[in-house]
View 1: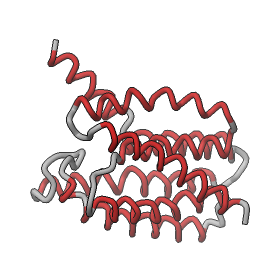
View 2 (view 1 turned 135 degrees about the vertical axis):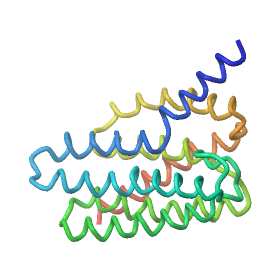
View 3 (view 1 turned 120 degrees about the vertical axis):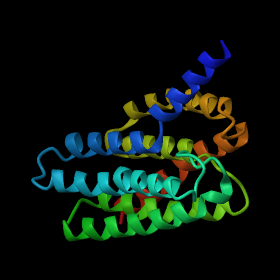
Length: 197
């Protein structure tokens, strides 16, 4: 029974992980929100490369050379280098988006991904925040800004993800709760300001 619970928690943790959630949300935003934009596929390429491809290759490489112990980077002390690299990846993605003359919401996603990665990096120096929960609720904020209140149904995934991360002993309750709250609040506030300029 215990192993079944662990397998379920592990499945949920991967199914609602940043490398799954972020590109899925970006696809929805670009393909439905900017369906008539002729550059929608270049936008998606930049977003996918920044949010999924680069993190996966980076973490795989770091795991291969022994710089991180697992693909979820469970230990706080091992998170500094990948977060630093991903900050620069998102800055680079932001520059590509500017060259594509992308809508402000899309440029803002990459700009504030970089800013928020720095924030998480600084928090990581003292405490271990849940990047899984941060990414999930920040993604809900993106969808809410673009499509309205219908996106808030996705908050139903929050307790499931909190349970899985706690069950796997990757985080405690407060680390998941704080990650979830600030993910939504910060991303919403940043992008609301950015697209309102």
